[in-house]
Length: 130
Image (cartoon, rainbow, N blue to C red; front, side, top):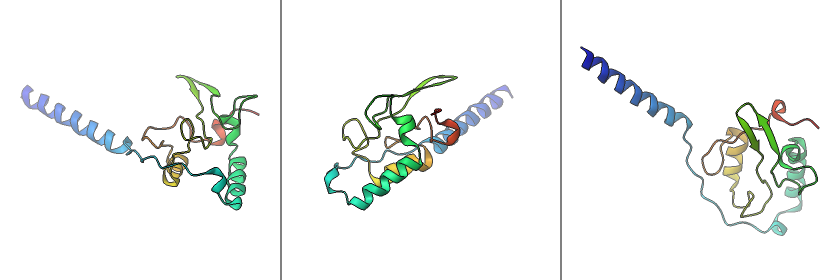
C-alpha cells in the first residue's frame, strides 16, 4: 500500500513538473543580421519614436544623465534590484539582432528573445515615478 502511494506521488510530481515547464518554457528566437539604422524608412522611425514616447520606455530604460534607452536603471523590488535592459539598436548590447517577432513577443508576453521571462512588462503600475 505504501509503495503504491509512493509511486503515485512520484508520478504526480513528474506530471506537475512537466505541466509547469510546458506552461513557462518559451523557445529561443534566433538572432538576425542587424540592419542599417540609416536604411529604415523615415516614417517607420517617426512611428517608433511615437510608440516609445507613448510607452514611456525612456522612463525605465534610461539612467539619469545616461544615453537614452541604454538601460541600467535599478528598480528595487521585494526580491532584489531589477536593472532595465539596453533597448538601443546596438547589435551587441541592445536589441539590434532581434527580429520583429522577438520584439513583439517581448512586448506582448514578457518573454525575451532567448526565452527568459522579462522582469516587467512596463505596465503603468510598474513605471518609476517621474
